[in-house]
Image 1: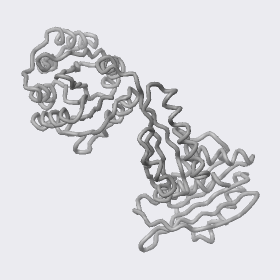
Image 2 (image 1 turned 180 degrees about the horizontal axis):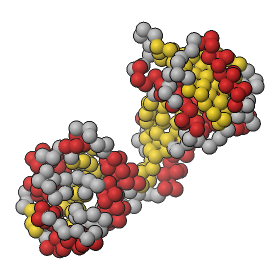
Image 3 (image 1 turned 90 degrees about the vertical axis):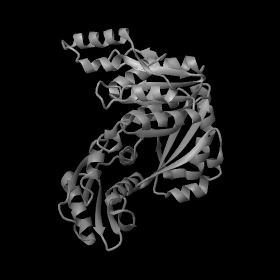
Image 4 (image 1 turned 30 degrees about the vertical axis):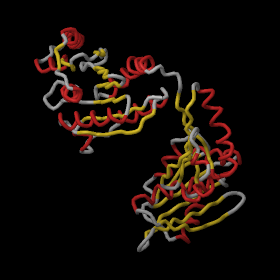
Length: 380
């Protein structure tokens, strides 16, 4: 199975001015094609640093994919950097220049002279026509390795990946397998506790099992390599069953399933409607529930945080006003060295209040309180 690296090029990415969504898209595409991705790198618009990054990547992997730096301006150095990395010059391709001019004609525009730079690619490279943009892509083959340079415009990059690059890679490396991932979502349990329960499974080689902690929830990832999706499913199935056996009700869903969806499903099974009151979360809980189909009857965002003993009364009043059977109130109280999260839950079966301390970064407290609140609703 070939190994790939991604190099995203652009000083604007390196400085944090724009988000690098191209690397994420490419990582998913490579995974679906059965190609291992070992590294992702971001380089500014510097010819020699890009060339060096490509040379170093070629020492480690079979496939180097670059995105960005194929525009017409002086600070678009990818063509020259790839040529430098493999020890060749760039060469003008008349057919690419004709394609670029035709693209401009379609929009009733005339290319400027600097657009002509986009018709230069490394000597011996295989040109890849870009029918949705003006920057041609190209492929450089060096012995048993390849460098693929793609435009940085996401729409153009995505089109070329699906219609040109993945078919090329499947043929070039005789790819028949896939890499499939299954995510199990948990709430109400910490990463270290999960690790203590499933640590032996995390040493498996195929499928592999790993953890990804978020504020208030933890994902358990199962990744299988196989010749087909059906075979990957066969590898994943017994591991998922064992994880579910060990982790039990802490698992609230898988893949695209959400905690808010699980929470509202629990309310719906009871035949109830739910109202919520929140203070200190900035409307997070209300927005998440409002955007999810289910028996959510409304939310009240308090401008001031009431004392804990008043939160229950406010929540009950709002429940009655919304004619809901169940209600949850949640508020965050800053302390000197931590945040306390107070929750009041009212249902036809019980009324309870409790406080949970949160000792993480203060800016993450609303998200932690959100997930904790949703988990309380899920377990009504």
